[in-house]
Image 1 (cartoon, rainbow, N blue to C red):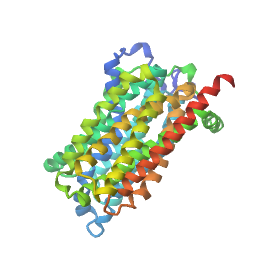
Image 2 (tube, helix red, strand yellow; image 1 turned 90 degrees about the horizontal axis):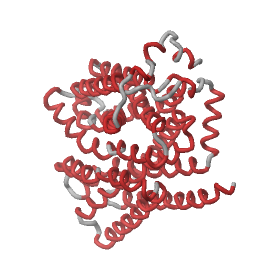
Image 3 (tube, rainbow, N blue to C red; image 1 turned 45 degrees about the vertical axis):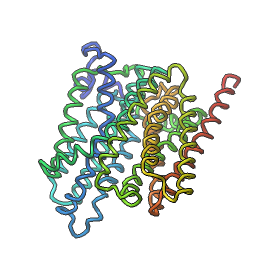
Image 4 (cartoon, rainbow, N blue to C red; image 1 turned 120 degrees about the vertical axis):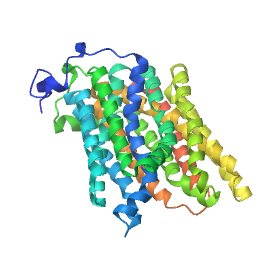
Length: 422
């Protein structure tokens, strides 16, 4: 497909890709806020649905209520599918076009789910939602790479990544309040409103960040060459491995933390309050990273954060073995650091991987996001099935993954030291 059509006034280009000079220039604070809202689409779409699952099961699949969690996996499936092609499309047709089109798919999926009368239609709508949501998440990273590089890019990404701790903290409670007033269909209405606000903001205020002369034709041969280039680069390859392990840590605790609260500590009734409070306490990690990364560098901060995770997880395992069950406050403090560690690692790892791939930022963001998310989910899913009513599977798995990630980061340091001589 020829990207020039979208740059020279072709059929759709004149409407979807207005000249950057006709758009207002965003300040840094507004840009960060918009990128964070775009990135928050996925977290909001997952976490706000959790309180709705029992009501959806009771209305649409009462004979098989255990099918309700498929609503979550359907969205993740759609997101995974969308992640692979939204970046390459944005490299061809521009960032704004793909983000706006993704939002349109997301809104359409939300509307279908809102109006649906069967469980199967809700599942199909959630897949469409996930495909659409991949656009804002993946392309927002490419937009940041278009405008920033190096440690400054890492600072911006770190602030945007605060959604990993902020949105999960408030989304379940927000979903509960919406359901109390409007039923489970109100959640999908909230998704529509959220996306409309964000896409109108983007359309009015964000200029196109990828000039026509820097766009790449959408050709399978060139896409395959770009993927080969990424995985041939040792720093990019090692960064993806480490990011996959860090995402696995995050997914594992999200899968297992609620059973721990319920079965180990008998705190199921207060779980959402503890979870939200701990997530909020962990939120400053991204801000701290934004302040420190320019001075100390991305790789050093990641390595230190992983080393601390190894020490803390090992201490909790030892404490648990000695006492039978660690005191709840010790577990809560450890849980807070797991979320804190995400703020010190994931954004920096994205920045490290994207730094040498600026000429194919959209494709790079897609591949990094798809590989790390899909493989991390594949790692975390069987670990979640190992829960045995104790802390050992959760803390032990995170200890091992943090150790492996630390080893990879140490190896990355040795590779970086050799690169100038090559």
